[in-house]
Length: 173
Image (cartoon, rainbow, N blue to C red; front, side, top):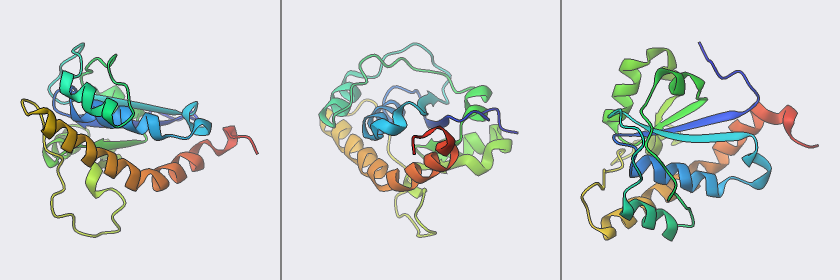
């Protein structure tokens, strides 16, 4: 049962505390969407830990900024059933998040992917999880932001096709 039947396309990134990886992914994807699609796509992030209202970590803000994205106004959001059910596609940062999502929301199983495994045409990904940089150095955050950025750039053509398919009636000819 999908709640999102509107002509917008909703993307959700999930990590643990929603203060590092998923906000960076949210911000990076938003900055990479074409102007034409931005009005029709809702990109959100949430955390499995259930925290709400916390800022992104200072290193996450700087790492995202180094990649051209401003997440300084981000506030953490707890993962909810409504967020999951409204989403057209959900990207988990690691295997633990994917298992959590699939166990808690089995009705959304077909929409849940590991970011690094999405659109790999069945190829085995050697290290499918994006490590949590929390407590790490700025260098670690930059490495994680680079990894997330590379994955978003890799999936963007496929994601753009999925978005266009759903919202095609709303786009100019």
